Length: 362
Image 1 (cartoon, rainbow, N blue to C red):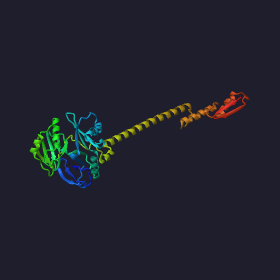
Image 2 (cartoon, one colour):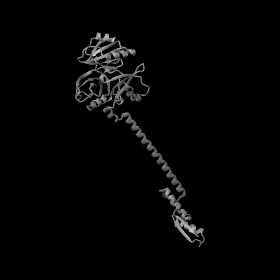
Image 3 (cartoon, helix red, strand yellow):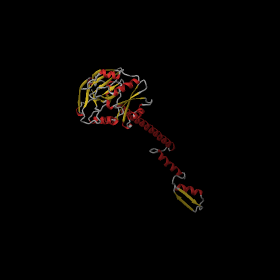
Image 4 (cartoon, helix red, strand yellow):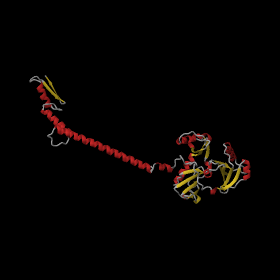
C-alpha cells in the first residue's frame, strides 16, 4: 500500500495540523481517504508527500555540463538572484533538460521542508519522495491545467511548472496567468487550451471572458478530488532529493546486505592470507632448524640428543677452543696459557685481566 500525504502551505507543521491523505493499493486505487491529525493517519511502508504549489518555485536555467554532485552545490547560487534569498536557505533540485538546453529547477525553502519531515518522522511517517502538486497534472502538449480554489489557485504547464495566483474579486483573469502565457509564447510554447479544475467549493469563472482576455481557450475540467490519486509522471522532480531526514540519518548507519557480504569476504581473505603467510614462515623455520641439526651432526657425529643446535654448537666450540688452548669468550685460563707461551719465564712483570681481556706488561 501507498500513503499519499498532502502537506498544507502553513509556515509550520505541528502535531495537531490536519492533513489530507489517500491510502492507495498496489494498482493505485484509493482504498481510503480523509483529513486527520498525524496520530490518526493510517501507516504504510511507501509514503509520498505532495507539496502545495505555493511553496514551490520553478525556474528554467542553462546549467554547465558538470556532474550531479557539482550541480547540487551550484543550484542554490544559480537561483539566488531570482529569489533574493540566502543560498543556505534554498533547497533546489534539478529536473529534466529540454531541447533548448534549459534545465527545469524546483526550489523550496530548506528550513520548511526539513522541519516538515522531522515532524512527520516523529510520528513514524517517513516519506520516500515528495512532489509538487503540479506534477499530478503535468505531461500535456499545449494543453495546460489550472486548479481553482476559493481565493487562489495554480497554473500548470506541460512540464509541470506551477505558477500560483490569487483570484480577483471581480472575476478578471489573474495577472500571473497572463504573464505565464505570454512568457510561454516568447519561448514558442504558447498553449492552445487551459483546463480549469475546481477544488472543494471553488467555482468556475466566466470562461468566455478569460478566453478573450488571454487570447487562448479556457475550458472546464474535472474536480480536483478526482485527480489527486493520479500517479506522478516519470521524470517528476523529487523534492526530497538531497534533504537530510531523520529516516535517512537513521538508515545511513545501516549497511546494505551486499556491503556486509563484501566486508565478510574481505575479512575471510585477510585471514586466509595471514594463515598462508604463517604456514610459509613456519615451514622456513622448520627447514632452518633441520639444516642447523644437519650441520651440528656433521661437526659432532657423537652427539646423541639435539635440543638446541645453536646453543649446543656454541658450547661444543668453546670446549674445543679450551682443549686446544685457544681463547673463547671471557676465558681467562686459555688466554693465560697463550700468554705463558708468548713470554719467556720471568719476563712478565705484571698481568691484568678485565672484561675478558688479558694484558701482560714486560
